[in-house]
Image (cartoon, rainbow, N blue to C red; front, top):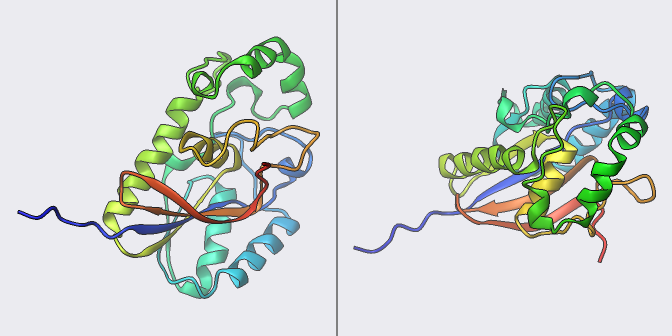
Length: 219
């Protein structure tokens, strides 16, 4: 019997719009949340215009309000209801949520320096403690969710709105980039801008990036 061919699903994986926490360098993570600010609303409306011709059949977002609001703005022209799922929440930053990124880097300097010496593969298993979610499990929950979406919507196009750190580490995990080429530090552009996105084609197993917007990958 011939093997059944599964038509690839196309997923637009989008980072949410700006919040005041983003603007002020405050870590949000999986529990600290905020509404979009005026800039974030404008970014989402611009993305809605940019993506209005994309034939979305369904829309999903993290259950955090900043992602849900973004997805609702983009979905409005498509007349889609946004379904939320906590599996695609931002990575948890534990005790550091609600604290500044400067404080985070100061308190974890030794660990972060050690982390920088590890191979990309080893970084996904490194345990920071302090309630910070290990990268491997964080990315695995996003991958599982995207695979389920691909199997549910073969040959169709789906919107998924999630979060910057989680999307960044997903892109590294699937081999699209490395920690070095998709850096996140104060000396470089953010690896994924608010409302940046990756266009993914997947059969539910493998992932292929066919286009990006607002993703600052260096060579």
